[in-house]
Length: 461
Image (cartoon, rainbow, N blue to C red; front, side, top):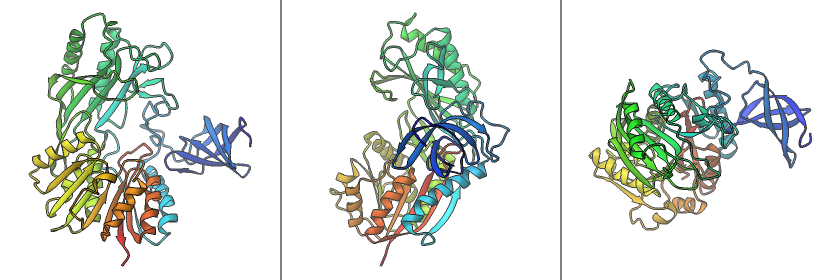
């Protein structure tokens, strides 16, 4: 096959995270955002080193695995969900196979205990946070608010019936879109850097039902037909009039004049209530602000952290390092009988939240340090008895791995949100005398390609 050539193929499997694999005349073709069993039509857009990558043009025939009922109406157009049309059991099977396929060559097939996958307690309405974008569904079209269209950096799909969030999210989104459409307020155009409306941030606690909403805008108020104060007051009253299952903890306005397409705050104004709410995980309370890192599936997080806690094992009187600790959730889950837990996290706001949460939960044996793991662990005088790792998607810096190995602890628990990074990092640990005892997947992201993996490593005596 050559670049630009059209083809048809049946997808035989999907490699992590979304790479469908098919064959044309014995030649392998990778097509993103496809499902096993689908017959697809595409065009070759890249060929290098004998590898062909195709761009999906259409689904010629659906997969026999796909269900026909209760599929999200935005599926296939919105770029958010890959597996929405598959029964949940099939989603779990695909994800478990993907992770095992990555770990087996590193750990040795049948040389470690692969414990399969644990599902999310709920599959619909599980997300506790969404960042919706303002835009238009097509160039110069009406105002839209929702998720990016699959494969597009600009087009926005209005997702008023999203299945992976609670219905309160959809009501808030719909009311916000109607309000600003009626006021004829324009969105921020990323290329021209002009316009007002940028994002809508919604967070909702599963356990308490508290809701935090933030409208993110630029400071370009000169095009508004009324004062910003009047406009925002009307939006606030619109939200407060909604008949929601949950209740508002806070309604905020966030000013963001960054040229980058990111959700961040130059200035935050509380329009109603407060700028935080509380969520509960495994009996612990956590204070969450607009930008706090917190697992997006609260009930799934309980499964993940309970699994990690079981892998950590006995902690009585031990010193534990929780590296890449975020808001300190794992540290606090394992702290009650430990002697001392030290968390290290590069995001200062997350460290501040971790300290507040530890105090809130009455835990005096947790210390949290702001800084890069690579540098901070040189400054810590304590020596750990065991280490928990929960790095970002890109995994652990190679030099940091070396320093972690130098502690010579008997057990390391590695929690990963990207199994390709996990597999790469595990090679370094195995080469240094560790072995993977067991591993388990936890599905925190039903309908999407995401997957969490927990590994227990032990030092070979």
